[in-house]
Image 1 (cartoon, rainbow, N blue to C red):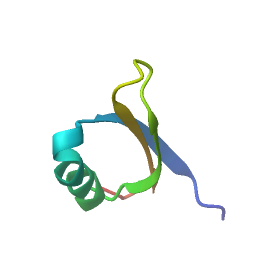
Image 2 (image 1 turned 30 degrees about the vertical axis):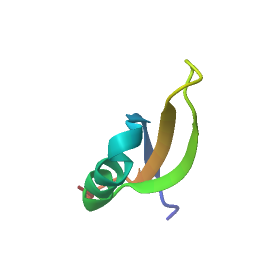
Image 3 (image 1 turned 60 degrees about the vertical axis):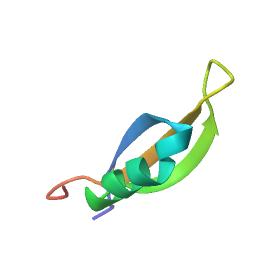
Image 4 (image 1 turned 90 degrees about the vertical axis):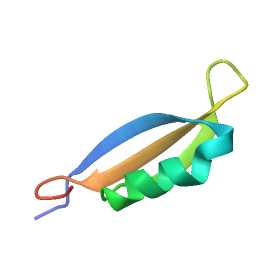
Length: 55
């Protein structure tokens, strides 16, 4: 059976990036990509994790 995924996008506060990503990682999320935010000054992280029994 194929793995199914759920996704999240979160804003990253530049002074607290590691703590934010560590917390999401502890909840089972894997970082996929970081891109500039829509305002051009911040960053947005895209994360994924398998569905079912995670977190």
